[in-house]
Amino acid sequence: MFAEQALTAHRSRNDRRGAGNVLRLRGDLQCELGDVEEALRSTNDALEIALSLRDHRLEGFWLITLGNVHQASGHFADALTAYQRSARLHRRLGDRSREALAWHGAGETYRRLDRHAEAADFHRQAVAVHHELGDAWHEALALEGLGLALLIKDPEAARRHLTQARSLLAGYDDPRAVQTRDRVERRLTSSS
Image (cartoon, rainbow, N blue to C red; front, side, top):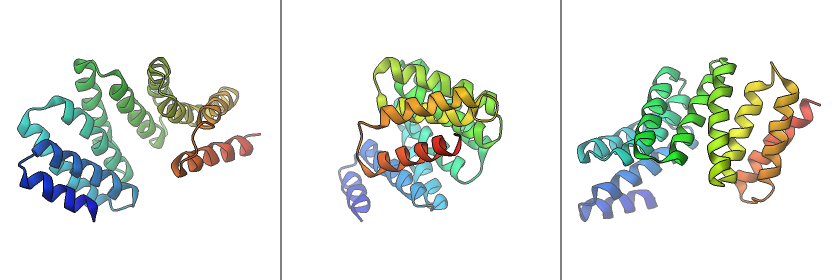
């Protein structure tokens, strides 16, 4: 596996930041493949490096991955703690893009907890920042989250947000974008 080779190379050069980033990426991949136990181990190892380096930038970014892993494993309180800590660190560092990524994660977690009003609030904040920064991909993801959070209470607004997400996704043709666009399209079709 390339991740193991990269991790070995970074460790042999005593590049702790690089090793931590490989661990974070490995955690993302493991989570995406459904291996949340290994993802948690990789991500926690990365965070230990960030904490030992006292690097708040790395800690904040890698906490987003930790939140994603906790969310995937159904540990929602832990996910919210990770996202909220990440958002605070990024706010202090002035990194609005990553702060918005943490808000999006919190929004997704609240939605999974059926706390739709809170989910919508976090997604609105994420949409606004990603739009302001010109980040169409993450704006589309946050719009999808906002649409899903509003589906029960305000179906018309949900449809508008999902339609806007679909429009933003039209410019992407990679497999993940196609899958996301298809998911949004199915939601729009089922809500007609």
